[in-house]
Amino acid sequence: MGRRSFSKTLALQQPCLVLLPIIITALWTILAAPAAASPLRVGFYRASCPSAEHIVRKTLKKAVSQDPGIAAPLIRLHFHDCFVRGCDGSVLLDSTPGNPSEKENMANKGSLTGFEVIDEIKAQLEARCPRTVSCSDILAFAARDSAFIAGGINYAVPAGRRDGRVSIKDEPSGNLPSSFFDAKQLQENFARKGLSLDDMVTLSGAHSIGDARCSSFSNRLYSFNATHPQDPSMDPSFAAELKKKCPPPPSNSGSSSAAQPEPTAPLDSISPDRLDNKYYVGLKIHRGLLTSDQTLSTSPSTAWMVKNNARNGKAWAKKFAAAMVKMGSIDVLTGSHEGEIRMNCRVVN
Image (cartoon, rainbow, N blue to C red; front, side, top):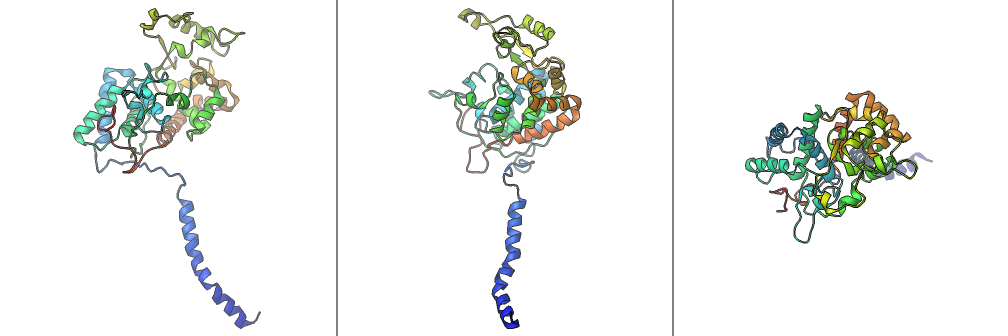
């Protein structure tokens, strides 16, 4: 190619050469930003309601002083909220005529508590910063503060959630994991929410505190399968302890027993009042209460995670904090055009 021909070709290519750095820069900007970056941010209320998180923690501490067992239900409330319609406070809504809410679902009715604590926190915040702090953010803050009070686990909570306007009775059934799930079913359930297998095993450590009703595990004591009435994966001495608390279910459930409160047992028999890694220690010695607990130690895909968590409590606590933040970002409503800021967490505005 001659010099003039080469120069002419180069001149024709100049616009492309000039634009190339711009294109590369634009692509780098797109690729450098997380594809699914959370719209939530730490310190969201720093300007609009600076005392928001302090009010939540102060009110929660007062509630715990009156009822030391309230921390577990508040963590559970946040979990049950996020797994149904995302973290939008839908679990807090009361039923309305013709529209039973999530509270009426069998997975929630009679087992979810702590609503009054959320009501009190919301009242305090409305008095200080009207129509500013969402109920869904209150749930996230209260869960974090419960983890701190019960286990010394502290972490920054990204906020900016807005509250949903819909709560449907049947939806928890298709979204919440069952206490009878095995490890594979649990993995699939959590994966649908964007949570990994390790997230699932880590978050299951919340069962280090709290109780479960006998009906959630009595099948493991009396009617496991045709060959083994008692679950062979349960430590026999542990089963004997549980049978003292949970008699065999009646052959027909009459109305006479319906009025009696159902007995419960601690989810973690080693340190039931402390959010720590002893839950995993219990799984290793076959003292998991629910099927969905013990399966983590008997399934090859998760048994090694249980061993690691049982061995290193500090590492588990750090992972738990990260997993709670990740769970708290499931399908959130944000911005001025999504959801609302409820004035009363039980009803839409």
